[in-house]
Amino acid sequence: MEYGFLSVIPPIVAIILALRTKQVYIALLFGIWFSWLIIEGWNPLNGTLAMIEGMVNVFQDKGSTRTIMFSALVGALLIFIQFSRGVEGFINIINKKLVKYENKKSGYSRVMVQILATFTGLLLFVETSISSLTVGTLYRPIFDKLGIPREKLAYIADSSSAPSSILIPFNAWGAFIMGLLLTQGIDKPFAMMIASIKYNFYPILAIGILFFIILSRKDFGPMKKAEKRTKETGMLLNKGSKPMVSDEVTSFPPKEGIPARAYNMVVPLATMVFMMPINLIYTGWNEVKDFSSTFDHIKQAIGAGSGSSSVLYAVITALLVAITMYTIQGFLKPKEAVNLTLKGISELMPLALLMLLAFAIGNACKELETGVYVANATKEWLSPQLLPAVVFIISSFIAFSTGTSWGTFAIMLLISIPMANTHGADVTIVVAATLGGGIFGDHCSPISDTSIISSMASASDHIDHVKTQLPYALVGGAITVILYLIIGFFG
Image (cartoon, rainbow, N blue to C red; front, side):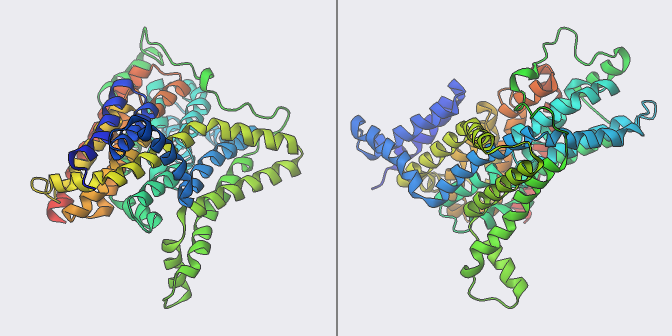
């Protein structure tokens, strides 16, 4: 059945509701209901029942179910790491290394600690919130001691979390995106996601700009004023500012009476990252029929492997390694392991729910052929050359207005991929533009979860954080649009 313009209404409704209410869950839920209302011929009872069945049917897809399970289990892994004092041990090592460089006159110590904070944020790519919380909470005393403004700490926490999570997609983000790509008919979502990384310019630029600002000490805009204020007056915050207290979003309390050992964090996380390609090879090995060598077989197997299975097996392995390590060390009992696992799962249930809703609206819009209609409607005036830049800007606007990258990915990928296919544009580049736009809008938005958590963990005034970060984000966004235009018109 041809739905025509009606097929566009559900995502438009979801976007408008997200803009007005700032509640992406409500927006997606209403968008799903509206989709099925149209499909069921405007019968509200049938539409509501179909919506419920549509959400149930998400679990019929094994990839979607694995992704939701992975997201929940990541929460358990993060709880275990915090419980073991592994992150604290890692930071203690960094602090010891810094002692010898404590020389405020040369500024070397200030640069070093900012670089280390950035690397910490990048290394904790497994989850953006834990990255921002860790960097803000653990480095705040060091930054205060060295006279670095709180706004700079919030900027580092914010700009090293989401970009690393999207560029190193062995995490819930990667699993979520692979699930969305599957709903749009991408047979090898992991290979597509990895291929898109080199075209995902904004997060690469965000990290590059962050390193440039730290190493060159050439701040500009409001951040320059903040640095000047702290240097001249010693004030870490603007006069009259209201810092967001981090106590409300503190991490899970660690086990008392045990030493802080860095390897309790490093080993489980390294296990998860290491097991990802191993599992991809394992799940894709028998899918490869024609190969020239063992190396070629491995390379093809990685591309043919199941991304959702790989991340799920990887996090389960990491959890088992963590439980074994902590049990051998004598501070984890079976009952505690069960309670921590359930606690971690419960903390990431909102993320699992968001994934469920995102997959459900993706399936509903696929039924309505929303993406195909939008692609055909824009075919006459929107050229393939302009498509990546336009998709990036639209994704940025949605993420800025709603404060969420996840919701943006869910809404935009189901539209941008069919548009790329219809217009004859490179799907890989369009996927990259969609993902990068979500990160850029998130960085600019005052209602972004990551920005709010960064402000809270850094004990910075939230509006001051947004104002000082905005110029750097805008520079990265502007360069990204230019790069997409250059690729579009010149290849």
